[in-house]
Each structure stands twice: as structure tokens, then as C-alpha cells.
Amino acid sequence: MMARPAAGRRTGRGFGRVLVTVYGILAFAALGRSSYELVVKFGEAPVAYTLSTLAAVVYVVATFALAIGSPAWRVTAWITVGIEAVGVLTIGALSLADAEAFGESTVWSGFGQGYGYVPLVLPFVGLWWLWRTSPRTSEERTA
Image 1 (tube, helix red, strand yellow):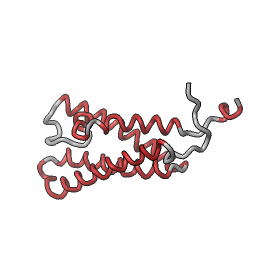
Image 2 (tube, one colour):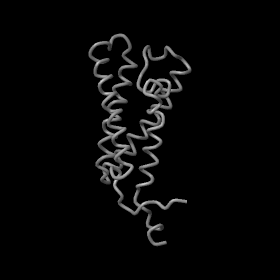
Image 3 (cartoon, one colour):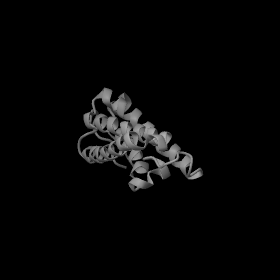
Image 4 (tube, one colour):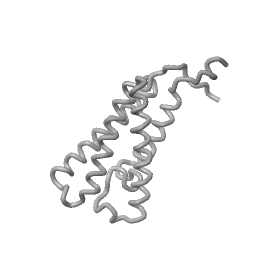
């Protein structure tokens, strides 16, 4: 079993740099897509385009939170990555149960199928990384 890293390890270091890069790319893609949809096509499927915008905001905030990795930003990362996980599972399941539920696809439709399922995998990798880099409990430090 691999040992957890020392207390205070930053989320944006080591493997975290790769994770932040992937989050940044997805944030850029989702933000570009949702901006276009909001400006040009909002009336066609407002729910889908609002959800895509929400996803984009979540990705942007998660990117910064993981990159900075200070205690306050770590809490923000836990929240945003958790929202991302719940969102992709919920929207993914609803979009498969009823293909017309949102009018158009969102970033999280079909569990992120339009983005190569990266939106499905990424939050769980992010949550794992946050746990992996979390400060040890006082019991672990004294053991």
C-alpha cells in the first residue's frame, strides 16, 4: 500500500499539475461552448445551455482551487469537484433516461460523451487527489 504524502502537500504540484492542466483545458472548452450557446442559441434550449454554463463555472473555479491549493482553496476544490461529480452523474443519468429532457446536450450529457467521457472520470480523479494530498490527521502524525 502506498503511503500518503506528507502533511501540507500542495494540490498543484507533481501529478496535480497534470490534473490542473486537464481541468484548465476542460474549463476553456466548456466556457467557450457555453458562452457561444448563451449568446447565440439560448432561446433554443435554455436549460441545457444554463447547465453547460454552470459546468463551465465549476471547471474554472476547480482549476484555480486545485492550482492554488491553500487551505481555503482546498475547501473550495472539495466543494466544486463534489458538485462536478454529482452533476455529471445526475445529468448523465437523466440525459440517458430521456434524451429530450434538456432539448440539447450539455457538457455533462451522456456522462460527458461529447468530451470523451473526461467529465465522468475527472471529478473522481480530482477527489482522489484531494484526499491523497490532504493533511494527515493528528493520529497519523503521532503514529
